[in-house]
View 1: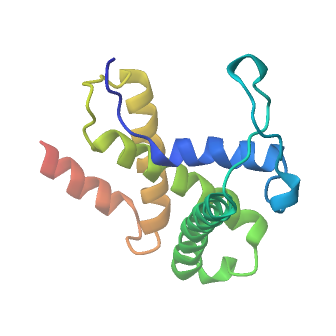
View 2: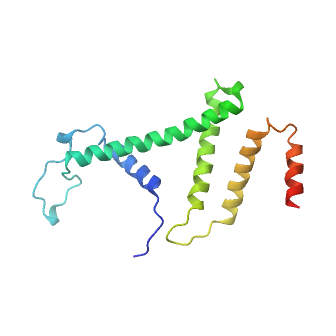
View 3: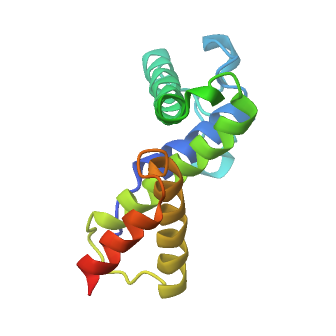
Length: 159
């Protein structure tokens, strides 16, 4: 069996979807199947699990969801700090914050080596870099006016 790169966020997202789909966060110990003595030929869609395991999985999923919200909140606060005039414009900030979280998550996910060597699609990489460059340029443009000065510095450095 070939080892693959561990993707805990993806795994937790899938588990969270399943957890919600089956409303396990809404069920107590009596909501889980109490069928006992199930033989191999009579497997059911539900199984009996210890309540401590059930509760801990629920806690892990709540924490996972909170971590995702924390990333968005930090990105939103960063944008509010950079452009305080947009502080009360959540409809504008949230999509930008979500894009920032998504692009940084993509780069982090492709920065760490896994068990299996993979090659990133060149077009996808260029697209992600253009998105990142656009976001950074937009974010720092208020500090470097006009932005042409920054472009000149980068051009001189890269030549």
